[in-house]
Length: 287
Image (cartoon, rainbow, N blue to C red; front, top):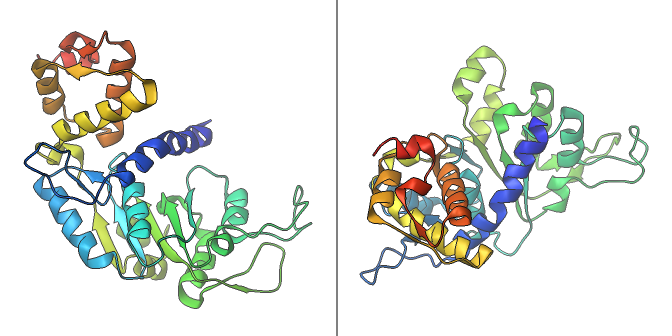
């Protein structure tokens, strides 16, 4: 159930990711346009620093490790690195390492040969082969089983994979972007994550700030989500200054994903204007 829920969360985020990446790569304008850089909404100092870092690394082709709490937009960074990078127009495949059982994850990533295990009725190429010349995004990399990590290290070091049940290797050319909300350094010390793999993945590191540290960005995100909900639900909603002030004061432990869910719920239930009374009880309690 937890695995299905995690996979469902990624699917639910797809429209948001696509809408954000479709926005122009522009700074905030005097005409009040929503500030968007690399598909990420916001103009706070931490987000300007993230955008400045992406300016430097987007045209490189080395592995990138994206760090941040759940809901901060790590997949947005991965998609931006692909869409604005050297591999634009090539395949982009994403996999959540925490959402797939270990035996299936190995097959999903590295492929398998027909008959290699029960249910393997046909050859399967796997993500690394299917995304050749493109990008593979590995979300929740800290949940990749320790026994599988040498196979990923081989992709990074040698540019090759060996499908399950095969004695032959296949050459691949992919950029790997990984993400986690875990402390991989601590996991290396504990022996639950390979140190050599960590250093291969963390050639470039992007640290995403939590929403509570992005002063002023909640208001931009609210406008963005209201526009998105109008397109998705065909419902145009406004928000009162009082309700917006409460949203701005909330700490958002679930980050941008929590804010998006809050706006989605209030738009669905409101009469066209979001009032403080429409907000979740814990947010209303700030009044």
